[in-house]
Length: 598
Image (cartoon, rainbow, N blue to C red; front, top):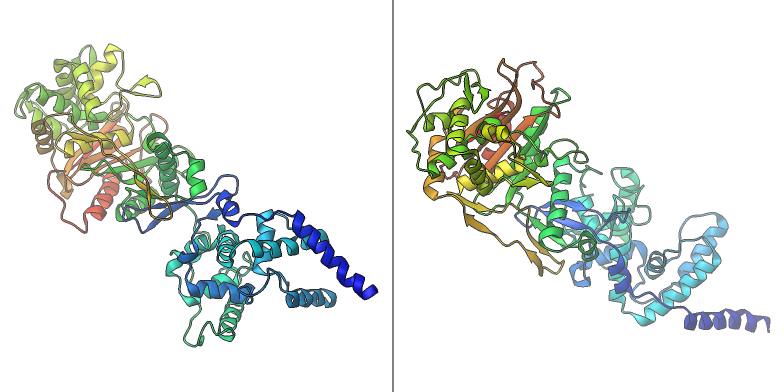
């Protein structure tokens, strides 16, 4: 009787609980978990960055069963549950072994993959008999309800591998920088080996135990005849642990999320729910050059100094390189209001040429001059008397450009700048001023514009007067490869091609810089010191704007104490980006950089 009761009681209880407990649907549980939004460079293959779900959801990208290579499946089963394909959701032998180990104080669990999945899916990881009992019942019932393929896929999309990676695809990216389909046998064994203790058996944390576990997985694969031999396999190299996210990458992520919501009607929560792939317009070579150039140039500089760089493809409007300075968590200086100074001059030139002026039209460039009641001077060395429109565009001749703007009308200059790409207002405030004295000084750049706006306007000149809206996102894909959103190019001829070409022709290329170039400065005081320095310019293939300044209106100096000029630090960054982007191809002539100071 006691023997009967010992058998019948648990069997009856198991049957009753089997009928009562609801099993989680693997697909619904998996889909309900927020996934990682993965950003790619413009090639669509190289990962640019990952946007993790907010609130600590971790890094996750779902894969289908047919996307998981057989040797990856075998490695995980060898490590965690080699009877998975034949057991009923739990393994009686494993349970007895685990119980014996607990009695003698040894380590080693008895949970199958199905039981591990139940624990993760229900979120119940209590060390209690009731939790373990429920887990056994649900493991049996879910095995009876769903296919083994579905269960293994759900498990591999859920389990944590360390390095913030939830799921096998995220783990492949975190450890090896590749998709799971490209992982080889040796790499698969490493990933499978870290599942039991993902934080501690990372090779960067404990290489000895990581190798021991790796060998165990390979031995199990050989024992199960899933691998002929482990001879010739070497312990795989992994990426550095937690390399971190660059400031520029964080800034690009912010711009991408804003663009998806505004233009694609795609809020962040939907993108996370579906684990979308975002192919950006960012060029890998140009972006890496921008980041390295900013880092090198800014190293050791005064704490108050700031920099930003934006590069745009004039033909598509795609943003090729982007860096807003800082640490990515504070101000993005590519989006801040800055005074363009003499970098604004080409827009005044375009307005004059539109009204019938010629490049050889005479201008008054003497200094000092009073224009519209406002005293103005030229920067040191900007001697242009007598002067022409061509010479005024080649040099930062404030008096000539301001006098020209006053003559043709500040409102018309402002309208041309708007057409080229300077927004009419930012945050509800007009960018080019409302007061008469402000409008009169527009020709010499006494106004506000963001570095990204200046890059857009110069890209319009590079494209022979065709303005294309700037954008960061080329397309958005589901994990299946189907398109969720593709950017639609919106282009408009805003100034005559003749005008844009004449402005380009007038801008020269000093100091060996390739392209249509104009330095820009915003002066500070009477001694020629600079408060903001710009290097702006383009080829027909790329328009790049570099800004350097500070949060206050003060003279900016480099680490040697010398004044910063457009052709010094800003030009170094400008050159690095332009050369990196044009390196694979011969740049289409028609451009020069444009230095400017405020």
